Amino acid sequence: MKWTLDKTQSRAVKEYLALLDQEDSLNRPQKSVSLTDPMCQWTGAKGPADFYYSNNYLIDVDHNVIMDVEASPSTNLLEVDTTRTMIERVENNHGLRPKRLMGDTAYGTADNLGFLVNEKQIEPHVPVHDKSKRNDNTYSREDFDYIETDDEYECPQGNRLRSTGRPTADKTLLYRSRNRDCAICPDKSRCCPNTVNRKIPRSVNESARDLARSITAGDTYINISSKQRKKVEMLFAHMKRHLNFSRLRLRGLKSANDECLLVATAQNLRRLAKLCAQPPPDHRIGAPA
Image (cartoon, rainbow, N blue to C red; front, side, top):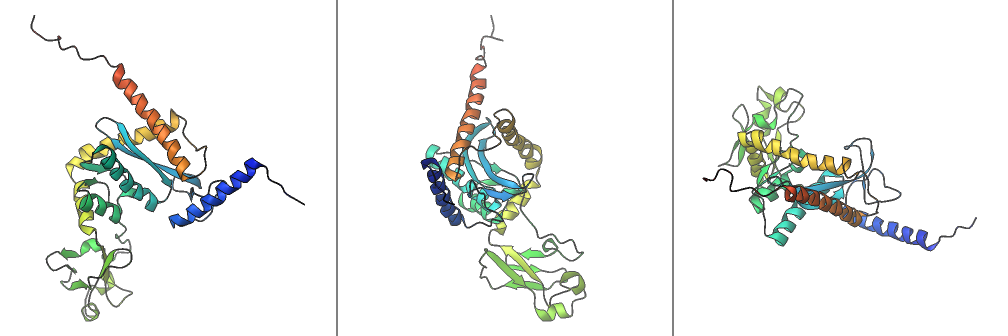
């Protein structure tokens, strides 16, 4: 049997093969590849497992205006990279830099918090993405005291854990106790029952993570930031319900960015219409006759 393709089908095949090359350049894990758009991501984190893009907004919560938008395949690594892209683009194009940034736990990775605090001096009102808590009744990392002056950890029994100072490939320092200290320790069964010593990983951006922890535990985050985040979620709800933007019509990450930009523009125009529809304040009210 012989197959032939018309010009439209041939162009679609060329576009798909070109997107496959771009998909490889993202260096991301994929369980399955879409037969229509290889740039989107197979995930079940957003509901029933399917191929998704994520729409990321940078919003001025004081005025409820979308400052920038960036689409990405639905993976935490690529979604966090959009934070850097949007902040730097708004700064370059408009000369604006936020004093604080709010987001959910997906944006609380060590690299992202390090970028916000160390490079941009932005307060991270973001819950820290932390998996150090243990659920097997053994000591977690929070049970060890970090001695900043000595760059060492101290265990509940007073023994020190030291690092070589050389970070691993994932930008983590490993602090280890001495074998002889753990061998005679009465708490070994609660600390490292299956290893000869205890090992604690610490990110090179741990100071930024500590700052984010202190902020999210404070009154400003609880009373203000957590409530203002609802404005962001409301814009996503309006995008899906009022504008019926539940799926993309075009193929590829660039096209996804174009569609998300058009939707954000429509939302900003709706906001502008509401602001302009309000009559100007009458300064004569309350003035002496």
